[in-house]
Amino acid sequence: MFEIILFSPQIPPNTGNIIRLSANCGSRLHLVRPLGFDLDEKACRRAGLDYHALGDVSVHDDLDTCLAGIGAPRVFAITTKGQGTVFDTAFRPGDAFLFGSETAGLPDTVHARFDKAARLRLPMRPGNRSLNLANAVSIVIYEAWRQSDFAGASPI
Image (cartoon, rainbow, N blue to C red; front, side, top):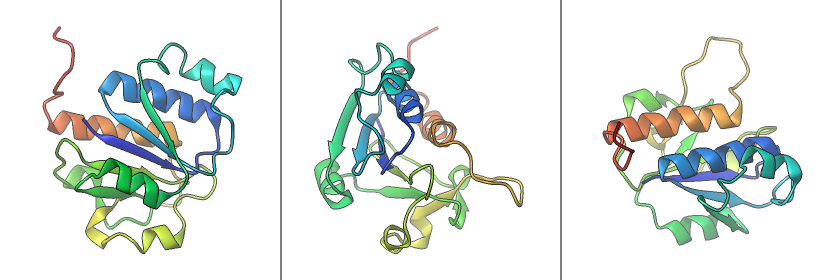
């Protein structure tokens, strides 16, 4: 449905939770090195318990290799420096969402690769730090999936 890209994730439980999210929403998860942990790390396994096998997770050596591999027609950088919000943008299946690391966000060199219209943010109150990575990914993916009428979701 959607592509989730984590650029240099650092905290194993966040990635584990995002593995679980991606499995439940039918999204593919892409991790771009360097990773701040080993995927076999206990905290990552525990958070993604039983979902790792259900999820579609790939690890890429760099962002260029990742983007070439997924071939997504549209990639959105989710950043506190975005002009528009994820709630003002129309998404479609196959779109990719790029998130920075928990400790540093996306580097300026990565920001520069994206047109202003492709840099999106989540609304927040002024003066606050950014949201937890797993929470931010959840909000974005569920908004994109909502716009697709939750295609592929289980019937009630």
